Length: 426
Picture 1: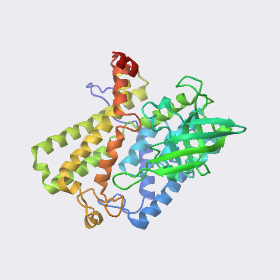
Picture 2: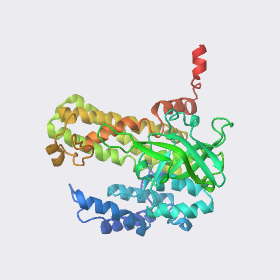
Picture 3: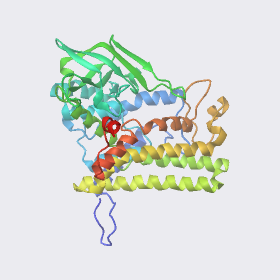
Picture 4: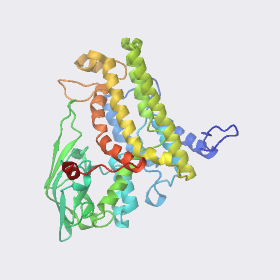
């Protein structure tokens, strides 16, 4: 893939062995997903959904699909890059979950694999693979979000344990986590980016308080987490003492480096749902709405093409400056796209976007509005929930404002942003 055909066009075909592997994955999915999964309009509800959520991680583990790209010695299948791409594509095509715990198998697991000691790998990786350990990420603080290096949470050594004090915020799923991988200042006398360590802290202990941050739709996935003399073993430092900044950048790289050829697909499916809503209520006849839909469609296609470019550069190990620039712009592009397209969705729904009665919620409302979450006195449709969530996506994982500075300075070679004290003097 990624070469040129005789007519000069880009060759996007996959090698025969990749297609053979695709057939193996597709057959496994068809055999293991619930009956009717691929039928149009299929939905899991109530006890069926609960049962699926409990059983599916076990099936994934038995099939060896969780973290399949990891080396075999650590429980993976040792997949090649091309095989990993095909695996992600087939699960995305089937709209089937490919992970047991996002924070575990996508963030901290690969980080431990790269930076951890053999003892840490033996202790934590099996539980991540089996989905037996739930994780959360403790990076952001009230005054240390985009400026992460200014964090104040500290850890002091007391015998064979670290004693952790401080606060984290916007900690997703902290209320369900068994462990938090967090950054703490272990050398307050060191420069800002130094003196920080990456710790694996057990959540179920005295001294840790989790307070949910209730969102407009009534959900509480985000949390504040307070640490007061919480403890973790001395050996739970990943990547070495005071090396946490480098380790954390690795974790953020995994977070921002989602699959090249599948990341656009969720936006593609969502846009189809929005289009169906516009057809259902007649907004499709509004020329402004039609134009906005076409702009959204064009941006999804840009994501698709850029994914192919990134994959081709990886497979051929080429230093493509354009592709390297994509790494700095991708997160900003998709998060701002999603914010804008969900605003478009609300404009298409009109008054239906502001209020959803209980009866509408049970019926699913307009097309694509079947999944309901949030408080009972104000039920929220799937589309409304996505609108609320999209407001946060330009902030978490790298704020759009900071990303623009990175693009300007590192990609375009523009002068660095003046520091606050320099602005004040000017």
